[in-house]
Length: 219
Image 1 (cartoon, rainbow, N blue to C red):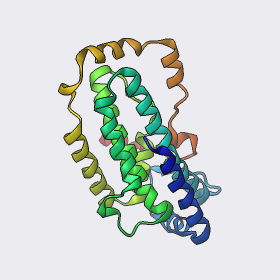
Image 2 (cartoon, rainbow, N blue to C red):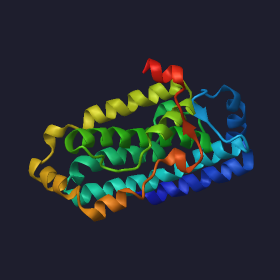
Image 3 (cartoon, rainbow, N blue to C red):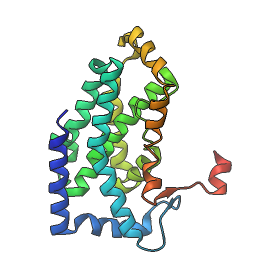
C-alpha cells in the first residue's frame, strides 16, 4: 500500500484550499440546502462542516493501512488487497468521471469512493462473521458526504463502487479454514478493546444525521 503518496496528495490539496478557498465557498453555498436531517452546531456551522470534510479525507490512508493489516493478520490479504489498491488508486489515478474536480473538493469525491468501498467490504464481513473487517463506523459520515457531493454524482460513485466489489470480491473464493481461524479471533479482548478506539467519525466531528418523527414513522 502506498498510503504515503495519498498523504502527500492530501497535503497538496490543503495547500490548494489555503490558496483558493474553493471548498469553503462551496460549503458556504450548501449550508442552506443541506438535508434537514443533517444537524450542525449553530455556531461555526461552516467551520464544522469544513473540518468534517478534512477529517473524512484524512482518514482514508489510516483506514486503508488498518484494513490491510487486519487482512494480512487474518490470512486473507490476497482477496482484500486488490480491493484496497482500487481505493488507493481512486486517489492516485482518479477515474475519468472525476475530471474537473480539484483540491479538497476533488479529494472529497475520491475519499467517498474509498470509504464506500471499505463499507462494502465491511458489509461482506458482517455477513460472514457478524463483525466488520474494520470497526470504524462511517455509515453516517458517508451519508453526509453523499449529500455534500450531490445526489446525482454520488449515485454514480456508488455504482462505480458496486461494480468494483462485484468484480473483485466473492466469498466463495476465500479459504474457509483461514476465515474460520479469523472468526475465532474476533472475541479476543485485545481485538474488542482495539475496536472501541474507532468511534463514529461524524459524531467525533460534531455533525449528526437525525431522523425526524415523520421519517422514523415512515421507516
